Amino acid sequence: MTMNAQGRPTRSDAPTVNAAPTFTGNKALQIEEALIFEVGHFAGTGVDLPEPNGGVDRLGGLNRNTDIGLPGLSEPETMRHFVRLSQKNYAIDMGPFPLGSCTMKHNPRLNEKIARLPGFSDLHPLTPEAQCQGALELIDQLAFWLKELTGMPAVAMSPKAGAHGELCGMMAIKAALEARGEAGKRTRVLAPESAHGTNPATAVQCGFIVDAIPADKTGRVDLAALKENLGDDVAGIMVTNPNTCGLFERDIRAIADAVHEAGGYFYCDGANFNAIAGKVKPGDLGVDAMHINLHKTFSTPHGGGGPGSGPTVLSEALAPYAPVPYVHFEDGKFSLVETRRAAKAEGESAKSLGRLTAFHGQMGMFTRALAYMMSHGRDGIAQAAEDAVLNANYVLSRLKEEMTPAFDGYCMHEALFDDGFLKDTGVETIDFAKAMIDEGYHPMTMYFPLVVHGAMLIEPTESESKRELDQFCEALLSLAKRAKAGDVDAFKAAPLHAPRRRLDETAAARKPVLRWTSESSVQAAE
Ligand SMILES: *Cc1c(COP(=O)(O)O)cnc(C)c1O
Image (cartoon, rainbow, N blue to C red; front, top):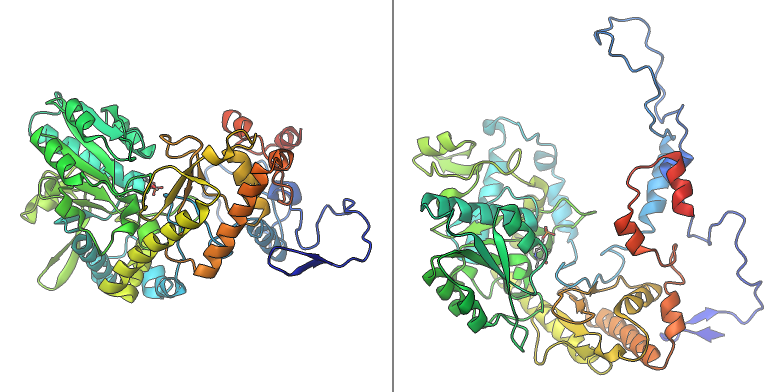
């Protein structure tokens, strides 16, 4: 009888025929699944409609005369295809998702229930205001609590992700500089070396030049270096707090003051707000603009890359430049201010930077985020932040037996390690991450932030129980011991048990095959 580290039998001692490939390619319940283009037949579909008989052709000769080229499957075949694919996916509903900076927390089912209420889920974005007062009130209430939690006077609700919120904030900064007649002069934006890639990307998108500010020995912004870089050509600074090393920027007030004195604005990347929500109000730290990732801090699902939601809070100085539309409440009625002219008529700002999206933002995410806030309450939100920090510090202190923390001392909501413990083992961060897949874990964030060599950034969030964290830590400790014991070949070969072995990530990035043709499946197989 073979036992696993959890003391459970994994295999009987009865002789087994050695794992020969199966006829189907399936491995028990792991079903090999081809692309839908390969299994679908172009002639058929899942619906069985009678041939049209006559009727007036209003297409004016534009009728399609070739096959549409979409794969056709019956309803049960379609269902099985997508369920099988979904079972190859790792999900927060299956186990811990320790991706640092991403805040993969549990998505409470209560939120899903509320979001599925027909009054919310069936609304069309062009529903007349008189018929969607409840939905507008919900947006307004969520906006109220976001302002309350951040201590900021205004919030733009329409940005659809964190990066989009950054764009909103930086466009507001640009608009404010234009109003001051300084847009031509203030061309530089400062960002720490540890910044998330979206920060410099956003600044460049808005036409700024980005200058990197080094970190000090403790992993925080080097205040002296920052001050040296300030001048009357600086539009502002973009700082994440807690930062991407999982550390609170202790000098944050001094940073804000120095930037303001130099005439710039302070953009705070609020992706890590989940570590301080209910404890610290960014408005008290001198922030001018900050996005909040509802899909991180407020537990709404990340989905397959979307939909997210990135409401952006704005200071008194930037509020006049907020994008349209926004919800307005007067005489007991909610309405949407859709244009700059309408804003002026309302006696509000005519300086709006304009429109960032069609419609008003991600309604489904607003509903879920408000449900999360209401079910947690003021004290519950603060406790979620405390528990996230506690869990990260538990992971940090357990893993430092075998792994090397990047910085000394306690962390906030995520624990950062470098690859020091792998020195001379031949095993690299990527091999370590791939071996985690074999153990049934989604890898942590790798090679980010860039300021740490071979970085491994682990964010457990408040969702994980001690039992879950212990098992995770024991798995990582055992991997670290194996790496040090010289098991390098096994690490280089990992993952062994995943549906696909190690992929050529460089080729995937450099030569992506983005469109299926009958040849591309042959190409990919080669
Ligand atoms: C996630 C994240 C972003 C970007 O947010 P998206 O919602 O993914 O666009 C920006 N900065 C940091 C630090 C992040 O972790």
